[in-house]
Image (cartoon, rainbow, N blue to C red; front, side, top):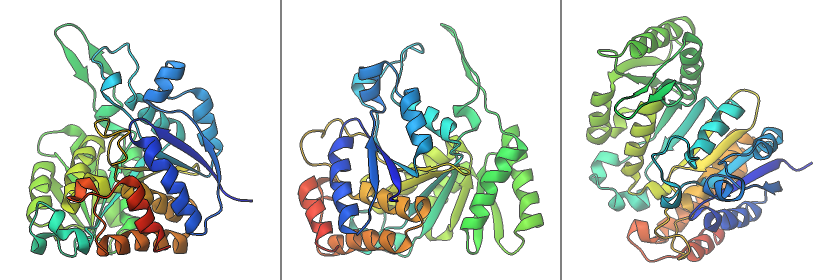
Amino acid sequence: MAPHVVLLPGDGIGPEITTPTLDVLNAAGVELEYEEHLFGGASIDAHGTALTDETLDACKRADAVLLAAVGGPKWDTTDPDKPRPEQGLLGMRKGLGLFANLRPVKPIPALYDASPLKRELIDQTDLMVVRELTGGIYFGDKTRTKDRASDDCVYTRAEVERIARVAFNTAKSRVTSVDKANILETSRLWREVVRELHSNEFPNIELEHLLVDNAAMKLIAAPRHFEVILTENMFGDILSDEAAMLTGSIGMLPSASLGGDGPGLFEPVHGSAPDIAGTGAANPLAMFLSAALMLRHGLGMEAQAASVESAVERALADGLRTRDLGGTATTSEATQAVLKHL
């Protein structure tokens, strides 16, 4: 039986990059069964909530979940009682137990000149950000009055251990654990637990600790220094977006969110780009690469994943450039350029 994938096109450019992704998967010789659901702002408009119980249940039953993009100015609000599209993401992560976010950052040689950094700085950069996804300040208790607000940042030993284990298992030689242990008590626990796990289970992997401000500078000054960056939820959110710009465009980066036994969630790092929605100008490449991550980490189809990634690289080497990469290629033209290599 073909693996079962839930599609969540979401908002903005989401539906426009989902359809061509299915064409790419088909051309790669992948047989999958698809089930599509509303998510994010589209779900708020239809159901009053960013994530319905029905959609979450469908995702739990699936072999993998492929998400395009959520959000947009239409649903922006500072009213804590109104639903926001991003709440769907948090609910999905919690509901599926997706505690590990993997973001590979590997600038493609054909795009070196699109990066704001010098070619010699980014050449041969190949790093993975492993971000804890269900704890920390994003999920802590929140309070709000007219004049005061608070967000509670909490981590447990078990939460730190399981994400650190993912990072050490991902690394070939070195893990850089990023925290703010000079200030935050949660970071002191984080550093202590990572250090213990390293000495008990992964002594052959090199471990270094960096404060988050130092790590942010080093990502720009010496990105080749990093192999695997292990960090908590908010720091990981910020650092992975910073790392995305090494490639020249946030429109190029995929991500995978993984948990225990359930399905993984695979999505591009970029947002819903409402300013270009409906114009046919969206860059679909990060969505194609997210589908490749789904094949590799979610469905165990390594050869097909590699063929999709290779087709994207070869299309870029042939000169494919979407608008965000300084070119003029439309979504459709980008798709055709990749399909040519499959």
